[in-house]
Image 1 (cartoon, rainbow, N blue to C red):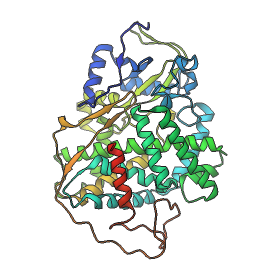
Image 2: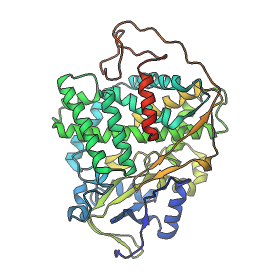
Image 3: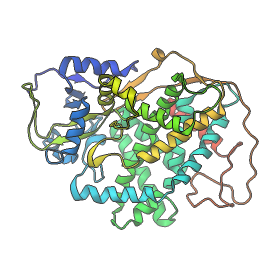
Image 4: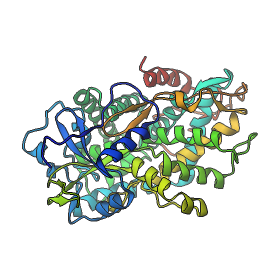
Amino acid sequence: MSSGCPRAKLYHHEPRPDPYSVYERMRAEHGPVVPVELEPGVHGWLVTDYTTLISWSRDTTTFGHDARLWKDFREGRVSADAAVLPMMAPRPNALFVDGTEHQRYRRAITDSLGAIASERWVRVTERYAHGLIDQFCQRGRADVLNEYARMLPLLVINELFGFDRDQGVRFVEAMRNLWLGVDAERSNAQAERALSEVVTAKHRDPGDDVTTRLIRHRAALTDEEVIMQLLLVVAAANEPTANLINAGVREVLADPNAPADRAPSPTMLADIVDRVLWHDPPITNYPVIYPRVDVPLGDGRTIEAGSPILLGFAASNRFYMEENAERMEETRNRAHVAWGAGPHRCPAREEATTITIVALRTLLDRLPGLRVEVPPEDLRWHLSALSWIPVTLPVQFTPQNPPPPTPVEGTPWTASDSRPETSAHRAPTSGRSPLSSLSSFLVRLMRGS
């Protein structure tokens, strides 16, 4: 394809409603594989077809995730300050390499995550969910995205990965800017610096946490490799999980079959999350693959070897669902690509789903009369090359008093304590804990104030 051919822009400076209309126009003009401009001067392709996305993700002979294949980057045609660079440039982590190198990193990640029992993920998520809701339940209204959905994954990850609060806040602030393509070079340095501090601290004071397990894993990762796996996993666990919770709240409140006076059953919540993963997945145009050889598209166009191809999970899911609506109605179908496809499929999908279901159940149990305060057409998203970031989700509900504090004997708990919970190190489930000041700060951070 010649450089003079028109390309669809994937970046937008102002928040927009209805992100899918952008992709409908792209497909109408270019077909299911769209030539795109990620930012001025950075070109690639976007796959919006479900079958093609799965086929190419599984074809490890023709396509690779190794960013060293990126021709324009390799030949110096991508500016050093390009906003997409920190999310696309080569890194020694499981998302950016292939073959045995990928298997080594992925095994370290899955083993370290899998060593934490699912019951602990549930217990920690419930505790923080209640603590966050306590901060706004008396008001009768809240921005459930910025006061709840964005903070809950951060707090859970802080504890289970062994971060202290300052490290976690700095990392999440940096990653949100990277997803948005804001001040990329500084944000990338801030994220890596926070993780480097975590790894240094865990060498000195190991704990029952994911970071310590990565350091001690039989793969014998270097400190840089540990930092890069943390960068991958924690980044994927925060903003995308917040987006999934946000979409789940909207889906539950719009579902006429959901009970009005209580949270849906666990089975119904799981079904609702599956629906969201089909039609509103939390990661939209990421990760990126690169063809090792020229790939003809059959319509006279060719994707040149080394061209970045963004995997459009959101568009591929949505258009497949619309094209197969009758079949989707007849059966419960979990064949979505929200978590990816092929050997690089998300290794933390169970943990993200657990956090989301617990977050929804707790919110709906605690806040009777919950409803979105504005019509759907008034909601807005930031659209960047790699993701859509929702701006806010204002809700109203019947005001509730928080439950009284639960007395705790022994040493006061802090979020940085990554030791197993014991009678002396168990956080209060309610009341005014150290979470209050942290949540107030995080709300200001997430709102950009």
